[in-house]
Image (cartoon, rainbow over all chains, first blue to last red; front, side, top):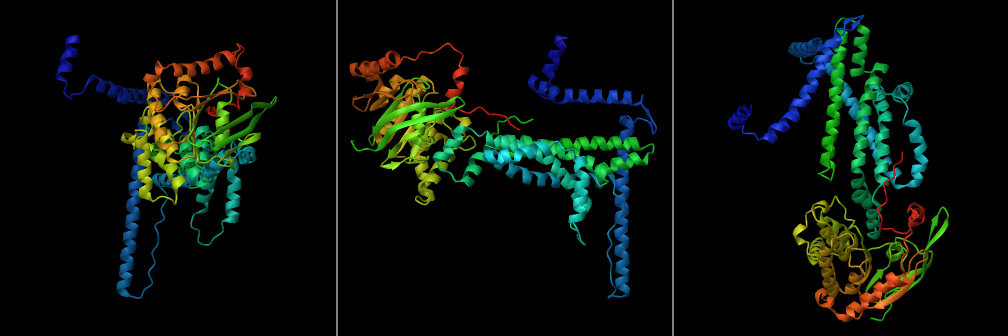
Length: 328
Length: 290
């Protein structure tokens, strides 16, 4: 046994040290093991569950549905392409016959595919999250700096923080349709409703964490600021914000996670375009493929949530002054 | 040397506590001449830091007051620069930027960009930190951080330099090294310095006068010892010097005979409430809320 290992070590085709092999094992082997186990349990478990729409889909069926969705997207692209080509041709003919002819360009209106819904959801969540951050960060700094403002606003935060998105949704819908009246709207109403709901629900973690981060600035640094007589702009820029950045990002990450969860629920309930609507439509559709397609949506929602969190981490390691801080 | 530069008159301070006001200091009278180096020594909790914070303007005296060149001190300001016990550098700025923040604040409109740059580098040179201009505080040692803290304070061109146990957190060798640096700088610049210390040797070596404080509550100045050792002082030569040892002995006898601190074996929790206001240099524990 030892002899074999020694031979292997001597041969060492890649030229890696034992440490590198070990880090490869922990970096690739264990995650792969976990994934394999999960797929196995899923596969075995799925066959035991019989629903009114047939057997619960296992990994293979879900992969099939994924391929179907990709194929639908491809066909849709082709159809759109063909539509524009026909339109161009028709217009060109019209112009050839009569140079003064009135030409109309129509936009292609196909049924939104799965990937269209993903894009809609992403745009909505990012807009809602950015709006929430734009409100929460300055307000959080204000609350953290002033005990009086904190006392004034804290009860409101505590009351509104636990409100479910589903409770906000009807109010937001009615208010938006009453207030946002325009013959040529820049945003669709459904987009606004989803976005505002996301904002209302994802405001709180950033707000609370920013204010805690700001109120815990070291006393010594505050004294430095006083001795230097920094004006409030410089004080906030050089002392408050850098101190609060780690807490702020904890809040931002929580907020983004909540924003993504809330959005799917809001889209489902309000039938607003997006991934939530896709899931709901499939559920109502009730074909034998529906469960598989919902599973695809669930996985995609998970992966996107994960990627959103990673991108926040990336932003944090880019913004944070403490490059040694362990972010996970 | 006899002009009144800094004057503390009948200074007393009370902190509100749940059990009524706590009198930390009373009847503190002290006059300091320009260019003088004064140490405050006493047991922990005797209000040394409080005196310094009142001079810095970070605390307001309940009665009495502080005059600097005839003007009352009522808020913090760069003409009374503070060197904090745990350096208090901004961890997200390099040593250069830390000093720059102070210089920009103090000399805005009075120095050009190039002059500021030169002045920052000059002050870091003074504390022998020119080799680490662009290092962050977490990349340099504790002694170096304290040097940068001193450079930042000196760069404000203060009328009074306030040092709150500047070398307390350092090892003995680094401390000796920094004490020598400080003596050199002081001989050069002739700053007025008030330094808080726990260290009898440090006090005798560096000071023109040592202000010894009685134990709190209601702490006040117990004795003032004038140290008439000639400058420049050399720690090795002084080790065997009878006069030096005599001064040392006087301070020690004040601290351990006249003002012997009786440490009660009661749990500290009881006194924690009244201690809360005493020591401003302590880092506040982060308190969670929300």
